[in-house]
Image (cartoon, one colour):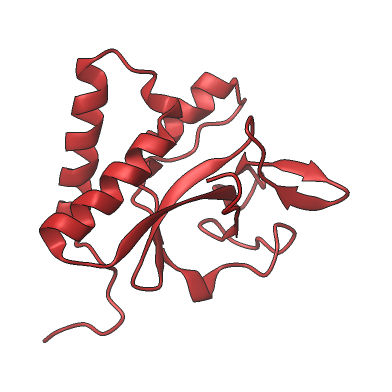
Length: 156
């Protein structure tokens, strides 16, 4: 039976794509924990070329609640006047495909935490979330996995 509203990629394919991209970065000693642009461009290209899906890399601000109890969140953005914004120094990149936000860097979130010096460790998970399930703002993250993104075409 075919699932409706299934994410664009099964877990095995998502992990395979992540591992290939990570392997390429590791082979050239890249700073993999900060390679969101590479993951988004390569991921969108692989989705288009091998899966024949409409996919595009997107750059902007992102916040993701990773822990209910401690209220820990990964924030790839800056706050200006209470608004979540992306800048050249504070941004994230992901893929949008079929109504989903896909972050091929999500398995590296523990490395992101370590590289940023966070006192907490985000879990290593797959990230394929329906855009319509996005929290209305960065102030409305209620449970682990809730997220909010703000696209920034000018930054892209």
